[in-house]
Amino acid sequence: MCLSLLSRIGAVQPGPFSPSVMFVPQKPYLTLDTLAAQVVFPGRVWSRTHLENHLVDLLNRVGLKYISETYDLFTVVAPWSQILSVGEQQRLSIARLLYHCPKVGCRARSCVRALGPTVVKNG
Image (cartoon, rainbow, N blue to C red; front, side, top):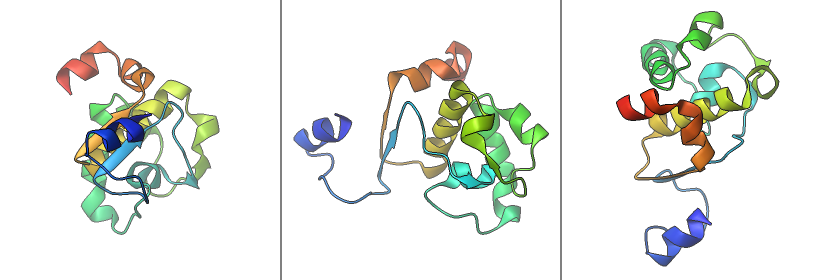
């Protein structure tokens, strides 16, 4: 629906993934990889030194700082879709959106509700 609407107003043309447009689904796609890889998906983690502080800041901004304190972002490979609650997965997908900074972001309403009013207001 978002792609259809954006196409009608000329914001995007239907076709392959464009880094200038990102969709945040209600149930995000999570890979069997590290937490850092979840945030930068569909990109790749190339350097821990350049990313660590930025990723911790993003997770903090969406209310997931405790996850970065519990799990090492770069070494723990796990089935995150089974470990994280749906709300945590949605927050992680918002961190992904913030990481990529697309020109256009289209999200499911429930993703913003998962953040809570304090995070949305301060975000």
